Amino acid sequence: MQLIFSLTVMVFVNYGGGGYWIFEHAPWNGLTVADLVMPWFVFIIGTSVVLAFTSLKKKGVGRWQLIRKLSWRSVILILIGFCFINYSPKDGLLSWSWLRIPGVLQRLGFTYFILSLMQTFWGQKVIPLQDHWWDPVRDVVLYWPEWIVIILLETLWLCLTFLLPVPNCPTGYLGPGGIGDNGLYPNCTGGAAGYIDKWLFGKNIYNWPTCKVMYQTTQPFDPEGLLGTINSIVMGFMGMQAGKILIFYRKKDVSILSRFLVWAILLGISAAILSKCTRDEGFIPVNKNLWSLSYITCMGFFSFILLGGMYFIMDVKGWWGGQPFIYPGMNSIFVYFGHSVLGPYFPFSWEMHFMESHWEMLFQNLWATTLWVLISYLLYRKKLFFKI
Image 1: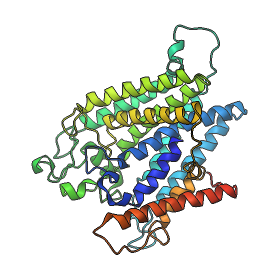
Image 2: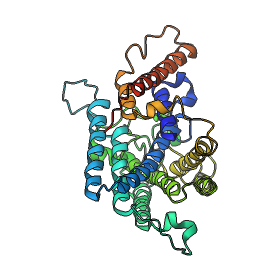
Image 3: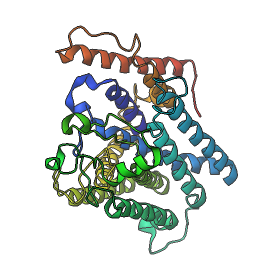
Image 4: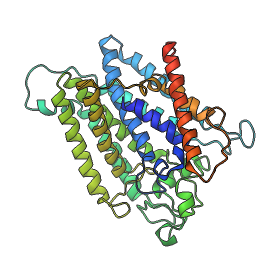
């Protein structure tokens, strides 16, 4: 349900969120509602991987069948993002000079690929019946190889972020560049993250980062770059942990909810320590552009709280079945692709006449989002589901 909810909010935010600042991404450090959406999506992808692969194993699907399936799905996601979502020709049909290489679906596809490989090789554990001293944390202990991979990935992120020398920039710089930091480092946007992306992709990265207007930056910076993708995998692994809790403690609502709460508390405390509960003065500020460590721990906190709340409302109490958000979730790729490609066209948008007021833009964005929910509902009624 978290996936379904976050997808609907993502559509609304991508259409403009009524022009309100809280539905726009933070210029650099800090959080808005818009900054919550993609991590929720990544988190629940991790949860879905555990649940789906466990179900496939029970059906007798072998390891190499799983590898072929996950590889195909990952490649298709990456190609859709690269060839269609990022496609906006300016200098000719196949001009390399403008084509952005990173992107949202590329990051989701690669994150899904790594998480699925981890689940395929180390996650298909049989739940032991006998008692062990580590039973209270068996959903962690049994998956120690996955934890080693995640610890190594996070160590890599920390080392590259804080130890990699960046020409003409302070080592470990996390600022926006431009006029930020009193204009001392104008060409250092994103520090090591920005440097690595420019070295790998050249100019084929995002040229309009959220810091461009406020900090008057001249350097491109891609919020879906390489270093941030490492932490996207770590974020998805938190979701995998939620999936393991659901499997190990099935039909034990108190155990599930209590473990969700424990994870939320641990991640929330970690985020508070790393950020010092400030926007700019922490050891590692909360930053969606960088997908910083404090950002994903903070998002992990919110994700466990949201998932726990929805589990309580929908599974424990049965107060709500998820309508109408459940329908876009059944055609998530179709909705994401459709709203990205068709967003600028009628009937999803039109030329606005009252530009100084939020009401027309808010109505337009709500109308477009509602239209995709309605389309999804009609597809559901016709039993048409577009899946990879």
